[in-house]
Image 1 (cartoon, rainbow, N blue to C red):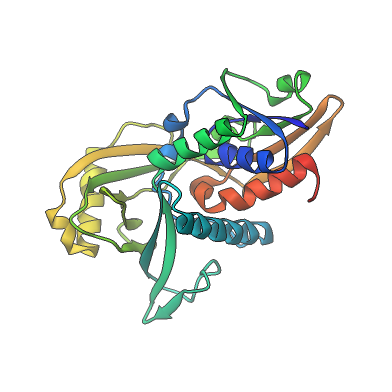
Image 2 (cartoon, helix red, strand yellow; image 1 turned 90 degrees about the horizontal axis):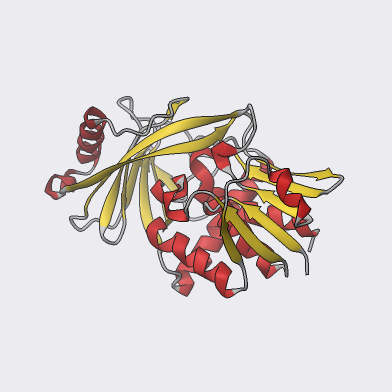
Length: 299
């Protein structure tokens, strides 16, 4: 049984850990940030390849992840929902459109998986523990330091990875009470700012912002008001909603796209898996498949 250490406990690290266990590895997850304090926990976590290029690997990861979330929703996995989605489109059908997508009068309709991260991430954590995995709270400056105790390390540290091509993208969202909404609505290219309304079971995620190279995490009251105004104009039923809280997350974006590759050293192998920007949930399971293959060989 191969020993693998996964460094990082966000959505990329946890899904990789699950896939590694399914392939027979003994997994330890090392992290210095609690899962519910990661940027993954802040994310709206709706399947949508926002700000991604149609690279062949990205296409494959998004397709695999979409299929996995559909399977999980059908199986009743905690926190996984399916939402009919209406998206305003000012161009042709986007490259990532799922099989059931239809485009009529510049309005794209499709089914989008959604993960309520405050439920879904703990479910992943519990699944890893139930399969014999361990979680160790420890700060590690360099993933290579872990190779003294394990032959394979998965580096899923997001913005903490030592990579000059990484940069933060600040995102602000607003959570409001759900006045009875069940359909997601998105206007990615609204001139006033990216606008999306994603209803969950007990609240609605309103967004948002996409501010490159901004790393402060203090909510902006003016931006909160602007987000609520844009979303209410898009979905008037939100006039009946009450604001619950505002959250900030720093997306781990990377020039050139996500880095998912194996580096072999004299002491073992490091599988780098970071830089997914705002599409970590969207690529997670497909990326985990590739990480497992890189760590354990094809199969």
